[in-house]
Length: 269
Image (cartoon, rainbow, N blue to C red; front, side):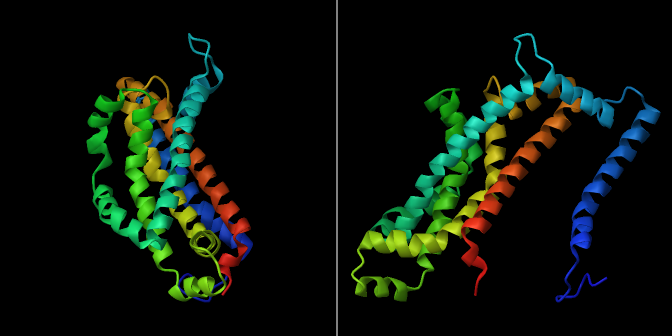
């Protein structure tokens, strides 16, 4: 089979089969568990069957509530807005990390502060954020940024510092300015890796998003999960979790494909 051969080259069919196998096993294991539990207790709510989960998903996605709104769409838009705002602010994290890695004065000014802030548990600051910013959108976006902003800054900083000094010296010999070296030599080389780091932090961003929505929100995927948990509505909770995972996976895949297409030189040696 070649599972433990470094030189193995699976065929396209084998690669797709291997990729799908664990998903299929999870579905089979869940179906078996649900069937067993419902055989013992037809009213079991902890492990709903696929038909029950589809009914729960249909009610939230295709049936309007008493306010004539589709809950899944409403919650998805609310969460996507918070996530998107947080993602936009991470541009500042990339710029700050870049400047720290290039300009020594900014490195000494921000480095130890960022190292300290990065170790503060963001969730521990949630009560403070609610007191300072209230229960609106600002506190939720701030929580996400406190959780991932310092990490992105430090990752960008380390990547910028890793650029060989010879390239900077060569840029100066060609009469390049400080900002030309920063944006035309350093940034193009580190940006694919930085984008990968942002992509890999999607999960952390979603975790902080759920935490903020679960405590103070009127709409959102995390908010809805914590509302229906009071009724042990697993037929809604599980589809919501799957829907959140699908959205995150799609965003990750699109960004990964864009990185691979835009920076085709990255894999060259």
